[in-house]
Length: 227
Image (cartoon, rainbow, N blue to C red; front, side, top):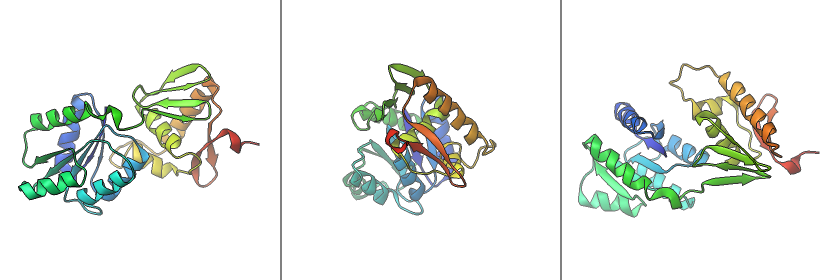
């Protein structure tokens, strides 16, 4: 299960991320509504954990935009506001649950687990392009009757490419989205993982490929683009 935490209090966000990862969730963490919207566009999630008071786009406006995009992934609001009218405002914006601060970590985990049980019908689990499909629940890629498993980073890269075919992504953009600014890993890791994915696509006999755009980055090439 994959969760996005959008919380501008870094210490709280890190504590929530640690709690979820200990319970076998894959977690992305951002600290503004603007960054959260970009992540939601690039990836699919089983649950969104959103603070209301965030820089850029606040949680309420963010969720309205997400729902306007037709994304129904369950959302849990975390906020210092606990009045009834504030809860009603959040629920009317499209939230599925509401947890006022301060809260107990065990209650937070229970709320997230409850929402993940409801999330299966919200996000597409398989993305298909050409003869190739990416299973977002099993982290595997299939083409021409063959299947191969992807590790977490390979899956995240492939998901970005398959959700945005033909779009060019710079190495910096991919690095920030998947490894994040706090990692000690160098940006050369992008080239390494692109190589891993290319070999797996070739192994499967896939008719899609990842091409290098000189001076710009990488893009997913579809069959009809080839001469």
